[in-house]
Length: 136
Image (tube, rainbow, N blue to C red; front, top):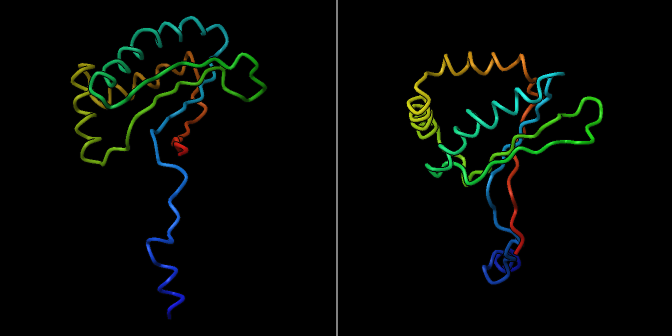
């Protein structure tokens, strides 16, 4: 019994060597042949405006577009990266979605249709969520 109590003592607890940090979403994009400039126009226009809106609201902290210049077969040409401080609960996600729709002067159905229309320029190859672990 004394051994068990001794091990649970706060004085013996070892503090973690990291703290959780920001989240990063990375989307892999395969740009279709002959569509690179068209897709870059979209990214430099509407996509960037959407990211700047989210950044101005504090929902994201940064974003960037990264090229994969030495892409092997089956790898994305581009990575769209978005960094944000926390994962929001469902109610807050819905509130932000409505705010975004108002900013875009659109609704979820129209935005989904526009996403599908971009399939003439690119193929989405999936997304990953990563979390930074800040070492102490």
